[in-house]
Amino acid sequence: MKSMTVKLLLSLSLALLTLNHSAYDKTKVSKSLDGAAVTILSPKNGAVITGDVVVKFGIKGMDVAPAGSDKVNSGHHHLLIDGTKMPESGMPMGNNVKHFGGGQTETTLTLSKGKHTLQLILGDKSHVPHHEMIVSEIITITVQ
Image (cartoon, rainbow, N blue to C red; front, side):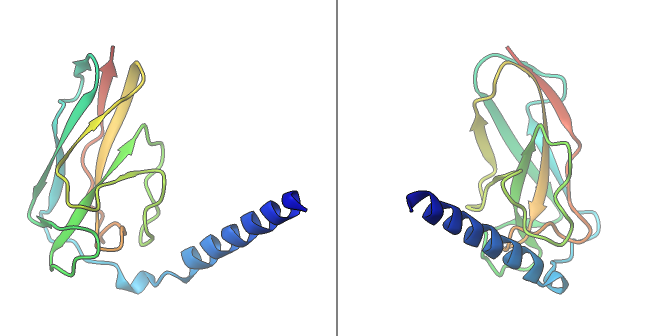
């Protein structure tokens, strides 16, 4: 019985997630401003780092505001770590990115030893990438 209950709950959760994803109104996507950009200020591309990685975010042409804020021409950062695929345009970003919905402009990451890629994506109040997407260059770092 317990196994059946767990399976039912998982099925319902998946159905709700699918419904929520497909029901999202893509017409409400925030527009980006011409010239708006996000950058990873540090570490620099090619950096070799020992220990935790402090990542500092930069933004130009728009403002940083917490998720849920109605502030015009703003958004909050999302960090794609070792990503192989950009989030879907016009849809809320999910678990494939690290969210900074409080308006944070830096973070400290504990990454495994080896090479890693980092890329910033600006999301609107609902975690949706702006149209046109505002993304940083991909940087590659090595953790020792």
